[in-house]
Length: 159
Picture 1 (tube, rainbow, N blue to C red):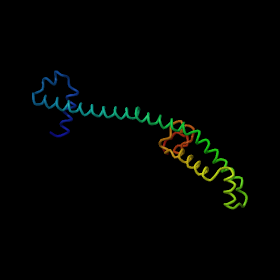
Picture 2 (cartoon, helix red, strand yellow):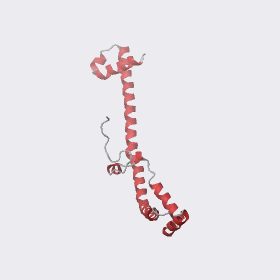
Picture 3 (tube, one colour):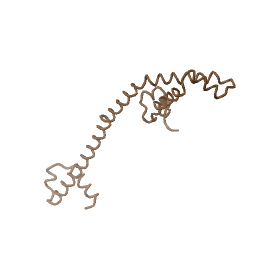
Picture 4 (tube, rainbow, N blue to C red):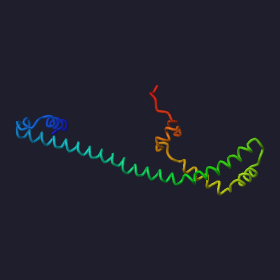
């Protein structure tokens, strides 16, 4: 039987009342009830899959996001210390910016503030903390204008 005919029988079965269906000839009643049952089964499966997707988003993904936020909170003190070290090194660079200084002298000045290994690990720690994809940054970050995707603005109408 063609698919459009089965769909028409299913629509008829869903729209009809029981006495109307009882009055149909036996082969047509059987076909109508079967098409209606199949249509309801497909609809139920779609609803279950939608519910499953919703549960996955609210339960599993929300749990993962909470765990990620907890990890970020645990990393904040180390990140703060690393950014202070990098700020000190940057201050050395900025203070010597107008003068003609060799690279060796510049490194010596930076190493007085922080060792090269310390500076390198601080750079890595800050880079790892800021390498979050833009699509995953939270609404609070977007609201403060920290998200480069929208820069704190709501998308307006296209012009």
